[in-house]
Length: 428
Image 1 (cartoon, rainbow, N blue to C red):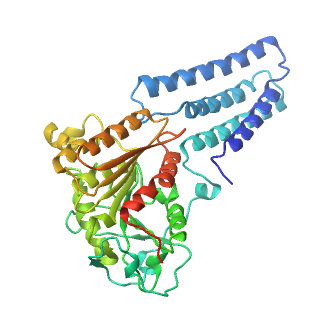
Image 2 (image 1 turned 45 degrees about the vertical axis):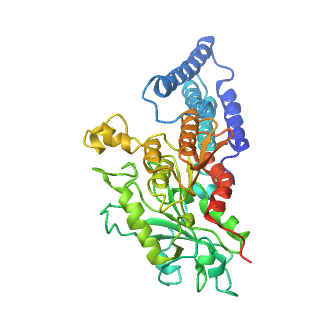
C-alpha cells in the first residue's frame, strides 16, 4: 500500500474530523463548549506561531519546510487538543471519541508529513528491508581489472552468457588504506550483467547519501535499485555498478568530503574507494566511464569530487546540492584550523575555477520547486560550471522540496543524460 498517496492521509483525516464532531457534540453546558473551543483554537494558534518562530524567525532546520508539512503538524496538535477538550464536562463516549480523534489525527499527520517528504513510499519500506548480503556471497569472485576500452562496454561481454532478470544489492567494507578514514560498510548495486560468469567492463558510479544518513539510504528511501533494474531490463542487463561508500563516518557526522581535521574523506573516496573498485570489478580506464551522484550533503560531495577529480569522474548528478559545504557557524574553526582562505578554496565554485577549463565533463543539478535556497544554489552552480566548459543543466522537480520525492524524481529524470554521458548503450 502506498504511504505517499494523499488519499490515504486524507481519509484518515476525515475519520478524525468525524470523531472530533462526536467528541464535542452536545456539551452539557455553554461554558464547557466555550472551554473546548478555546482549548482547540489556542492550541492551533500556539502551534502555528511556534512553527513560524522556529522555522522562519529562529535557527530553522537548514532547509525549507513546505506549507503542507507545517499544516500537518498543526493537524496533529489540533487532534490532541480535541482529545483534551473532550475530557471536561463530557460523558464517557465523548471522551472515547476524543481519544480516537486524537489518535487518528496524529496518524493522519504522520502520513501527511511522510507524503510531503517521501521517506517511506510503501508499508514495506516502513517496516524496513533486510540487510543486504555480503559482496563475496553474490559476486562471481573474479578479480578486477582496468581496461582501455573507453565506453565500449558491449564489446567486452561474453556472448551467449545468461543474464539474470535483476541486479543485486550487496554490502562490503572498503578499506581506508591510504586515508585511514573510519568509514562504515558500503552499499553496492551490481547490475545483471555484473552477475554473469564472465562480467563485461561496466561503468562505475559512486553514490552519496545526505546527512544525517547511511550508505544504504539512496536504496532504502530513494528506490535507486528499482530505477537501475528498470534501466538494465531495457538494456540487456547493462547498467552501472553503483557503489555507495560512507563519506560521513557516522549518521550525524559531516566531514564535508574534504581532507581536513574531521577526516580524509576526499582521499578515501578518490583514492581508496576507486582503487578498491578497480581491484574488484572489470572497469574502464576512461573518466567517461566513471561518475558520481548524491542527495543534499551527498550532492555537494558529488559536485566537489567531479570538479576536483575530472581525471577520475567525468559525470555527476547532484540532487539538492548546497552552494558550499558547511557544518554551521564554526565550520572554519572546526574543520580548517581557523583558515577562512583554506575553507574558501574548497567551495565548489572555487574548485571549478581552480581545475578548469574542463574537457568532457557533465553535471546535472536537480532541486525541488519548493526548496528555493537549493534551487538558487543549483542555478548558481550550473552557471559556474558552464563558465569553465562543463556541460551543465538544471532540472526542477515540480511540487517537491528538500526531500526523497525530489530524489526519486531526480533519478527518474536525471539519469538519462547521466547514463548517456557514461556511454551506456543497448547491448546487441
